[in-house]
Structure formats: structure tokens, C-alpha cells
Length: 428
Image (cartoon, rainbow, N blue to C red; front, side):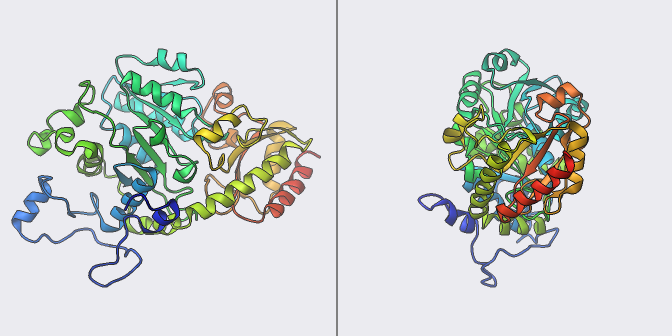
């Protein structure tokens, strides 16, 4: 299901059809490990990638398949692969592109866990990352070398709500012949569709806004279908013969779906970062109300950010929806429906005042998550970004005097009252 249907229709119907056996209207949870083959020839065709179907739930599952089609449709992609978490999605996105000695160029404005994954963990694979301020396009281009295999950024960066200039970065990636990978977790396709701005791949932590209820973890990689994997010889996993499939060439065989098929047939097969069908079910339920929730998230965030900016107990607010934000001019082009609901603010009194603020809130939940219907808060310098040096914390927008909020869909007046009383205690 594709356009001309609108987003609100697609978020409910895309990928979903009544169950042919029972007529069930909601997508069933196919809680099974394996699927019976029609005969030996059918099994052989599936294993040879000559026929599409279900073999084993580590690879494909009907519930997960509906979710994959729905997310791909909402993002405007050719296909998608779902997996066990957002971090798994990042590794799976890089897996077909990288090799020992290869590097990615990544934004300095990333979630703290992503910074750690890219600066530390991927080195064990022989990969490396260069971190650059993506507002400096000359520096971004200078960081690219013959071993660079991807450019990575977030549409709306966690924790500060910084909006990346995706059209400019996408144009640079296209000129350099490199795939642009955009983490769209914080924006969701309701606020931003990175493929329309030049992204090759879009990754999500479906744990966050897509599910929206704080129940399950999951990840997704959306394939735009636009990149020519055979043009440069830099991506042999997709362009060269694959020994495990008798010399099949993924790009030659599957065209726009090359990355998607590789993600399932090789990535999930060998890395095993599988999404379970019950998690897919919860996320499908969440996506049905995505546009409604995001409208309320954004409206609440705008009101609360304005209130915080006017409060003398607050040094600064990073919300891009504020006219005072240096990234406000990007909202109309990159996120025309709003600047999201994730941002930070600096509290007068520093680190200790932030700790007291967090400890005195009642409605805000102190958790390491975002994108829930509930409003959430965390102090990044003592939690998500604590592994980083003070300089790296500041570069990531997580200085010691900063807290991150994920504004939920409660009554905005109640949230402001909760912040007010907690700030009174924190800055007394």
C-alpha cells in the first residue's frame, strides 16, 4: 500500500491484510520458530533466495514482515529489516558496507550510546569512526577518505534536539558517492522523511516513538532503494558474488531491494539480531496512533520550552522550535510538522542542581528512554554520556548542567507545574 493514501491511513493499513485463514483484522502474533515447507523443492527455492517466503523466525516472520512493510511505506523506502534494538539496527546497517580498515564519518551530535558504539565497540571489528561537526560541511568533506564507507547522523539529534541540515549533507554524500545513514528515531517519519533529503538508509530504535508505550525494544533499517551499490566497487558484499549463495550478486539480482534482502539473508542469518513477533505486534499497535501522538508531543514541547526559556532559573533551552534556536530555520525544511519533543535545558546551579531537579519531580519519570507517552527526564552527564570526557560531553550537548527531557502527551499545564516545584527545590 502506497500513496495516494495519506500518512494517517498508511500508519494503520500499510502491510496489513485480514488473516487469510481466520479473517482476523488485527495482525496476528505468529509465535512460531519455524514454518512448514510445501515440499522439498519449495524448501530448496527458499534457501536459494529464488522464492520469497518463511523459513525460520530468526530470518522472517509474518508479524515482523507486516511491521517492516509499514515502516518502509511510512519512510518512503523500498524495503525494511526489523531487528532487536536500535543499536542492533546501527550495526546491521553498517555490516554490509564495512570491513577491516574501513571507516565512517559521523556527526558529533549523537546519542551517547551511539558515540560509545562508534568510538569503542566497532573498533573490535576493525572499523573506525571520525566525528565531525556536520554544520561544517568543509570539515565533513575533508574527513572523507578512500576508506570511508558511510556518513552517519541523526535527523533530530539526541539529546539536544539539534536538527541536521539533511539536504546539504545528503547532497554532499551523493557527490562523494557514499551512502548517508540517518537515525530518524527522534523525528519519526511523521516529522521528517530523510530519504526525501538524500538518505540512503534510515535507522530507527522502534523502542521509542514508533512503539510509544515503553513496552518493548526493537530496531529497523529502511532501504531507500536509490543507491547504486555496484558503481564504485566499494561495497562487495552487495555487488560481488556471495559465496554462501552460489555466487549470487545481491545488487544485480534484487536491484532496489539489494540491501533489504542482504539484511535478512546474511545479516539476520549470521548476526541473529532478531525482533520477536510479540515486540513487532506492540510496535504495530503503537504506529497506528503515531501521527496523533506526535502532534500532541510537539504541541506540549513547544509550550514547555517557551515556559522554560522565560524562567530565570534556566540558563538556556535547546529546543529547535523556539525562534531563538540557531537551528530554528531548519524546522520548516527538514521537519515541517514540528521540531519534535526531545530537548535539553541548562539549570542554574550546575551538576548538583540537575540532580536535585531529577530527584524532586513527580510526573516526569527518571529513565534511560525517550519517546514514551509519559514525560521522561535524565541527566546525561551522569548516565547516558558519563563514559565521555567533559569535552566530548559538551560537544554532544550533554554538559554537566544539562538535563534532557522527552515531553509526553499529558496535560502540559500539569507538566509545567511539576517542573516548577522541582526547580524551586533544585535552585533554592
